[in-house]
Amino acid sequence: MLQPRRNRCAALSLLGALAVAAGMAACGGSIAPTPLTPTIATITTLPTIDEMLSDKTLGSASAPNQIVEYVSFIHAASATFHLQLVPQLKTQYVDTLKAQITFRNLFLSGETLNAAALARCAGNARFFDAVDTIFRNQASWAAASDPDAAVGRLMLGFGMSQSVVDGCVGNTALQNGLAKIHTDALSATYLLPDGTQRAASPTQGSILAVPAVVVNGVLLDGKNASDGSINADNAPTLANIQKFLK
View 1: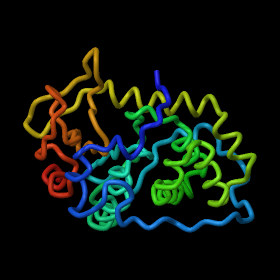
View 2 (view 1 turned 120 degrees about the vertical axis):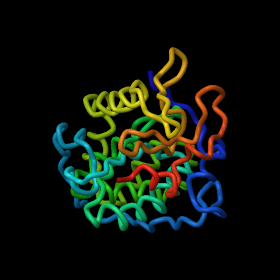
View 3 (view 1 turned 90 degrees about the vertical axis):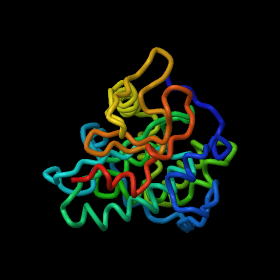
View 4 (view 1 turned 30 degrees about the vertical axis):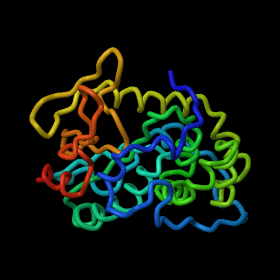
């Protein structure tokens, strides 16, 4: 059961330093927020539930490499990973038809599902723009006294109508679908870089931290399952990702 909890930037671990370029600050770094002002709503209709829960991908499904990105909207390390490392992957592998990237949210720090739901309510055409906006403005909305209300206001500035925002965060089918994506990811069994496998246990899921990636079936989440300690060989860095690309 996913429960809300008010831990945000303070919840970051050393994993963020392993996953991104050295020198980035832990909460916000050099990521510039996207300036948004209320505008005429351009997203006035809620997408169908099938569209909202469909896989969100960059690149062709027939690409020889499949990369699944797992992130949390409230983690600065996830923001830096998505805004700085994913564009490198896109340029080098997606745009050259060598890889497809699938985006998925995990809720490992007890955040609510609202930010993830709002991104999907932007529709397929604007989904990744919404993701970038949520991540670039993370330092403001995630630190607010009411993060859910703050991210909702952010989406109004992004171009969502109030009716879409309201219908999105109150959509039970969408919330249940997001929870299932989370549960399915944590209950799967993954191959690790050392050739062993990691399965979920009665006390923890098989993905231990975000950001994480699964590259052609190999999980990189920067953690040792035995004690939760940092494992640099298993971190979601560009160099480690490239080791498992065809």
